Amino acid sequence: MFDAARIRARCCGAWLFLAATLSAALPAVAGDWPEFRGPTGQGLSTARRLPTAWSESENVVWKRPIPGLGWSSPVLSGGRIYLTAAVPAENEGPVALRALCLAADSGKILWDREVVTVARDKVPDVHAKNSNASPTPIVYRNRLYVHFGHLGTACLGLDGRVLWLNTELTYAPVHGNGGSPIIAGGGLVFSCDGASDPFIAALGLERGNILWRVPRLGENLPKTFSFATPLLIEVAGTPQVISPGAGSVGALDPQTGAEIWRVRYDGYSVIPRPVYGHGMIYLSTGYDQPKILAIRVDGHGDVTDTRVVWTAARGAPNTPSLLLVGDELYAVSDRGVASCFDAHSGEVHWQERVGGNYSASPVYADGKIYLQTEDGLGIVLKAGQEFEKLAENQLDERTLASYAVDDGVIFIRGDASLYRIEAK
Image (cartoon, rainbow, N blue to C red; front, side, top):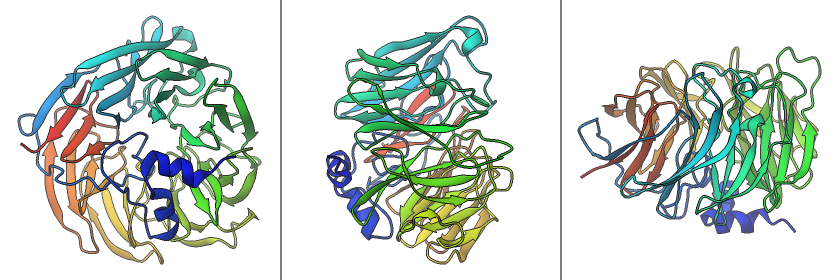
């Protein structure tokens, strides 16, 4: 039987319990960062001594060129960094979708494995801020799971051997692929929200077989595509997969995909991953006019009119995920407005223009909020109800991926390189 608390405990200590009982989930120890937004899936870390100053010439322990192009965020497990990339990056010839493993201490590429090669005419056109390798991989029980949207999903051993590959879940993407997979209900769960007939699916961890596939609910949506990563939570002992898409967010039974509750909204091309605390899910609703919603998770059926606690429009992001730390909910909009809300009421503590354009999701560690602009500028804020900017740090590469962190270390992916940033 599936036991969400046991699986979460094995992955990342007692974090799921903390997420259900405290204002926000904080990891028990720093260390592995095994999936998109870290071990809690919500951008939270107990890592200490993270650097607040860096540049191309300061506090860069190593800078490793990465072949091809990919905007999957780095993940960290057992002293190794895992990434995906599409090679070549140019619009000529077939595209090799690859998984890479690097030594975290030296940046040495330990292996670089071709997972699947796709003919150029089968590769979708992608948005200027996307790639053919944007979903972030996940490390779970000595396996690496990589996802390339409709182009395929695979499981590798940590030595780089491809154990299985599934290319059955086809659909027509818009602007390419983006949402990352999660582990839930004994399967690998992800969204397949394309140009029509969007659905959510789960693959078996051992063989990659389709465990379930359920259509998105909703009628007469003018645009159905989205790129959001689901979040596994637990409500009164029952696991829920929170999966945003165009027109609505749904809570699903991770064993079957059956819907538990749903909230409708106006929005499509939904990218931010939800966060969870205080008995509520917080999310942003996507284009064209995003809103932040705070939704109680104890409902059943269509709860649009009964479980939305508060909403906020000003400062809501289209792309970066939210960040819940204690009683404060933080956001940074795509155009560089950072906000701090009271998580219970939506009251604004502060809103400040911090500059730049944003795709990467923020990270909290050691009392600080870390932001990363698309043009390489890292901004460090002090967490709290009063705004204070601590540092600005420029790198020379375009940066759309989110951080991975460990004690004293930040890993940053640029469009050509992976950086290890560490205070010397």
